[in-house]
Length: 59
Image 1: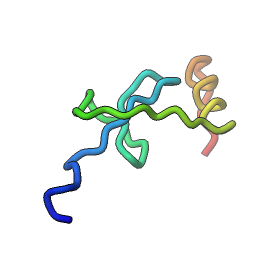
Image 2: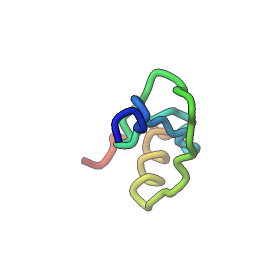
Image 3: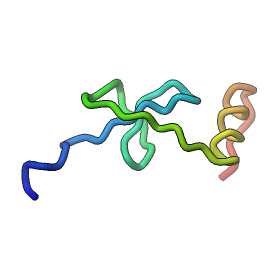
Image 4: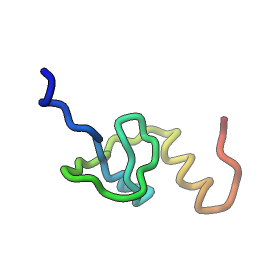
């Protein structure tokens, strides 16, 4: 219903320690209320390791 939807959905992506929206687009900071983005796939873990090592991400 109108007025019952948050203007911004914000989640803390724990593995990368950043805030993202429902599409995993980065946000500049937390927007209350903040949920936890905890489900990770092999791809998410691969991206985190690649970022930590400075290796380009897989497209």
